[in-house]
Image 1 (cartoon, rainbow, N blue to C red):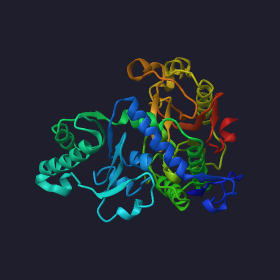
Image 2 (cartoon, helix red, strand yellow):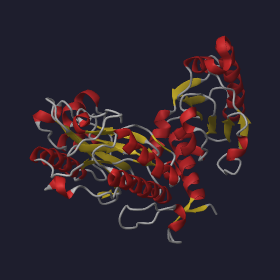
Image 3 (tube, rainbow, N blue to C red):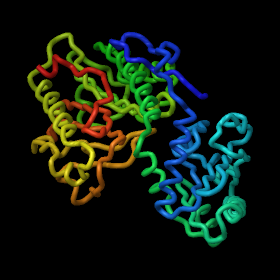
Image 4 (cartoon, rainbow, N blue to C red):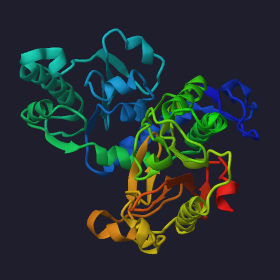
Length: 418
């Protein structure tokens, strides 16, 4: 059995909680995790009439097979891909020299060398390389799925997709099937999620402990990476840590900016952590040595109110439209700099669904239903359009049979809530 330890719930955030320090009864059955995920993909493929998926997105490859290899590199290079037949084999096309990395995975029936259809790999003969790739895939599809197969693909060169369509198949976007599959988590998957969150909370604890006037944003941000990687996490997707006036508007990346006395420091974790699962929560801290100002406390209290109001709406059977209609009413002074989403799905990264603010729903929103075992993040950014600091808060949650459970456990700042 592929039983792996996960992080135990220990008080405080003052030391690394390594995988081998958890109690024996907190074990993850990775066979069950993999079987559930591949089953989910095939269930959704059948639902949407897809006979085979060709997956290039490294997160989707890992979800369907648990194969991980150079995920950041693979996100921009079509150098490895996964063939998933509805009623047939799962074949991994792996980067040169790497076939041994996934030989142990029971989800994969065969490993073959990949044909890298990119300009970097093929030069000016890229169109010829794309036709070679399409011919190889076409032979495989006809063998296992028939000559009239519907093929789901994503994250592939336009030329490769056109060449495959020329082979006579119906081409559709695989995202619909895979995103719907990823939206529902199993009990064993939730242990992976919890493990990732506990590790990331440890890392954020290290960041918080190091906050002092004179340190730069990037020096502080590097501590998050160090602690995440030391505990078996994968990488951090974004660079969202800023201080002082750079907290507003949001989405300013960590820089050489020197953090000043009594600044606010805001971060969004965006960690692809343990077992490949996303850990996504946001916190804002006060540097000191003085006390927070009344304005800093007002910003923080509004953000805190927004996420808790919106978490109170979510539950099984609530529609996305209903959620948007009942969501917290952002004060006009802070509307222009609002976070672009009110909430979003989360799993191995940010995923389906996106939930929009009330004022944005008509233009950007879509309907759907919250279901048990969906995991979602509820977001807030409060910063005035006319400047000054801002506050970012976010919680990582689970939709249960009865309502909503908050999975992220990093504490809020009492001094900013006063």
